[in-house]
Image (tube, rainbow, N blue to C red; front, side, top):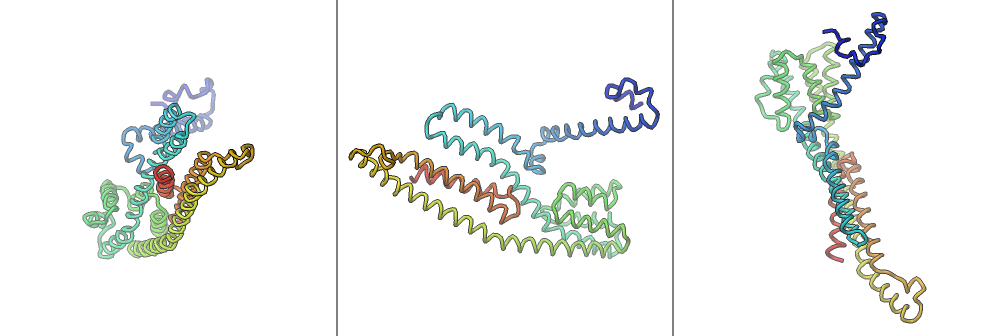
Length: 330
């Protein structure tokens, strides 16, 4: 069927007067536009069909669910608590509802990718040994797919199935890297494909890629272990800050309130000490503690695990601790 008929409404009314070359360029642009639109719709359809898998691959899509829910809580809470101190609780829980689903999705994805990267060197080394023994690459992948590689096992079976349908080894690795696009996997796949194109023994290339992946993973784990000290320091700093704020709120604010009452009774009500409002300063301390906890969590994620998104779980913990201290202990 002629493409002009398929996309006739997208072509100019005088398209029949165009030259063959101009018509081809126009049709290519129309096809490209249609493909972009289809790609956008495919993401939405994939999310509706299997939201769990889509959220696992793209944790940021969790905001699609959390933001509307948070807005409903915010609107309903504002309607009930407007003009009362409880409005602070509504704002705090609105923020927590917004970030909790993405935090869970990010944590699950990072945990899966970490486990996948952990078994990648073993998988590449096993294929290298099979290839050195004389097996073809498809046969090598088929043989190792019967083994156990933790979180990588599912991906190995997918690669075996792909190669059984005639897809090349290089393209299979690229498809694997597209499904799990972590820096270590992308680096290993790029190293294997580039070395294979340059020529040489595939078994040696795979062994070098396995060694490189293992060293990079060890360096990453070492860096993470070293930076975990800073996460502990951030938690300690937050708890010290929270302790000081709590002591000021429970001891200093009541003292100032009593001094204010005494000053008012003595006729100094117009002065600052006479107009001291303890509830106002208690709310101010709550706001300070909650903001400190939320921002400290983001900093802990960036410093300890290399991504702000991985600090959302720390923000949830610190924010909840600050809220509980001011709600139940002060």
